[in-house]
Amino acid sequence: MFEKIIILDFGSQTTQLIGRRLRELNEYCEIVPYNKFPEKTDNIKGVILSGSPFSVYDPQAFKVDLSNIRGKFPVLGICYGAQYMAYTSGGKVQPANSREYGRANLSYIDKEDSLFREISEGSQIWMSHGDSITNLPDNFKKIASTDDVEFAAYRVEGEKTWGVQFHPEVFHTLDGIILLENFLDICGATRNWSPASFVESTVTELKEQLGNDKVILALSGGVDSSVAAVLLNKAIGKNLTCIFVDHGLLRKDEFENVLRDYEHLGLNVIGVNARERFYKALAGVSDPERKRKIIGAGFIDVFDEEAHKIKDVKWLAQGTIYPDIIESLSITGTTIKSHHNVGGLPEKMNLKLCEPLRLLFKDEVRRVGTELGMMHHLIKRHPFPGPGLGVRILGDITEEKVRVLQEADDIFIKGLREWNLYDKVWQAGVILLPVQSVGVMGDERTYENAVALRAVTSTDAMTADWAQLPYEFLAKVSNEIINKVKGVNRVVYDISSKPPATIEWE
View (cartoon, rainbow, N blue to C red):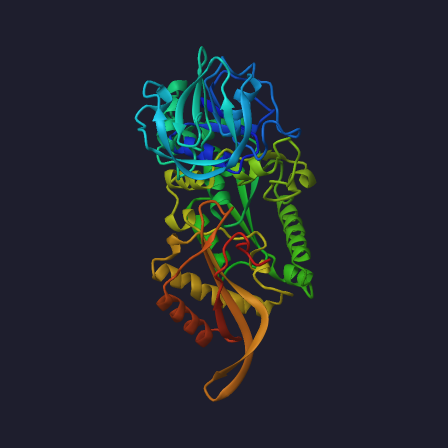
C-alpha cells in the first residue's frame, strides 16, 4: 500500500490540480470530500485543505472539525483552507477592499521557515479570493506577505501546520511546485509513486482480488479501456475476455484496425458487428439526448448478450479513471453523475466491478500504458465520444451520412498525422452539419452538405481552446475533402473555445 497525502476538498475548481501536482512529484495522494477523512490512517503522511467557493463566515460554508487532524499530521491549508484554520482558531477573516485575483509578488518571506526553503522574496504567486485574514490567532506566526496582503502565509507554532492565502498548485505561482515539494519533505514523504510501481502493485492486487475468477471488459478502442485491458491481461491472462462492439458509428476502418492492435497486444477479444441493429434503432431520431440513450441502451444489450455466452463470469472490468470518480460525487457525498463507463451494466448483469485505473489521472494512464509497452498510437489516441459519430452527425443518422462523415474525418485525421499535428492537439474530428449549400463543381451546380472541422488544445478537457492550425494545412484538407468525398461541397473550421462552447457539438 502506497503512503499518501489526503486532500480535503472544500469545493475549489483547482482541487484536482493539487492532486496532479503531487503526483508529478511522485507522491501518491487521494482527494476526498472535506467531511470524509479516512478512518484508516496508517499510511497517511500529511493533509492538504483545498480552496472553496464560499467565505468561511457564510452560513452555507463547508465546516469540519480538524481536531483529529491538526497536531497528528502535517497540514497545509490553501486559500479557504488557510482562512478556515485561522478563523476557527480565533483569528479574523474579512472581505477584502477589492477582490484579490491574479498575479502578486511576495514582498516578505521568513527565510528560516521550511515551507519557503529555496523561495525568494519577489517570487510571483497567484491570488484568488474575496476575503483576507486580517488578524492571526496568538499562536499563528506570519511567514510571508505581499504588498496588499499582510498574512499571505502563516505557521502555527507548536504544530506542523501551515496556511497560504495563494494557490501554489497553479502555473502562475512560479515557485508553487517548490512549496509543495517542501511540504512533502516536512511530511517525510518518500515519493515512491511511479508508473512502474503502480503496475507492480496493481498486478499483485488484481491477482489477489480476482483469483481464478473470469472477467469481462468492454473495449472502446480508447486509451483508458485499452490500458485497463493490458493491465488485467498481465494479472489474469486467459481469464480476461474483452468485448469490442461496433455500433456503426466508429471512424473509418476503426473496427478492423483496433481489433488488429488488440491481437498484437495478445488480448482475448470478441469483436461484434452490430451496425445494422443500431442504424435501425436510430432511424428518424434527431434529438441528441435520445440518440445518446438509444446508443447507450443498445450497447448494453449487445454487450449483455455476448457476455452471457461466456460461462461463469463474476467480474465486469472498466477503464474508469480518477476524474470520473471525483466528479461522480459532490463534496457532500451526493452522486451528481454516474461514473460508470458502461452505465447500468454492473446492476443489469449482477457482476462485481473491477476498476484498475480508478486512481489515475489521464496523463498517468498514458504513462502506465508506456510502461506496459503499448504502441504509441494507442496511448496517444485522441479522446473519442462513446456514442461516436452519432454526436457528430447533427440531426438523424443514416448509413449514408455515416459514410460521408467517415470519409471526411479520415482525410482530416490522416492529414493531422502527416503534418505532425496530431500529437499537438487534444481532440479533433469532423462534424456533419444539417445544412446544404450551393456550390459549383466543373460546370455543374451542386447543392450538397457542409462539414465543420473541429480541433482543440486542452490538458484535461474541462477547458479547451481551438487549435490554431496552419492555413496551408486547412486549405489542403478542405480541398481534399471537397474533391474526394461525394456529398460535401463546403468545409468550415470551428474557432469556438470551451467555455462557452463544448468540444463536441451534441
